[in-house]
Figure 1: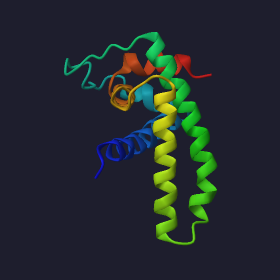
Figure 2: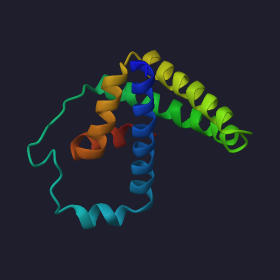
Figure 3: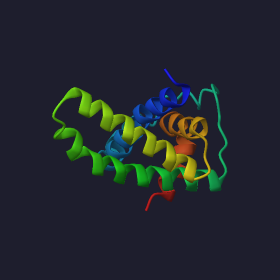
Figure 4: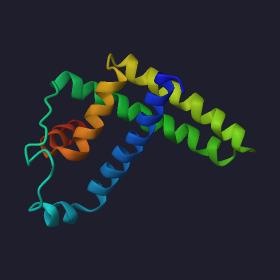
Length: 133
């Protein structure tokens, strides 16, 4: 499998996780209060990433564009006549997602790393959440 396609597929999965995490955080703030006492990997010293404000702004802009893209493709996926059509749509969407990321002057690896940091590092999550309109 082409490395770029594989990376975009990974991005698709991570973006879905990011979107689900954002939705959960917005819908269930009590969960955050309940889990405050648990240790996150980053807090345990496993890894602390630093991303500039500019990188996080680019990430948020890309994420918002991808949310719009996913909405645009949702009905098309739901109405696909065959698995081949759905696979073709997925490939098309993944290519557009890669373009969105690259148009923000981020590379896919950095974008993916920020998604992972969002889900594992409270400081990164808080910084990103503060940028989301």
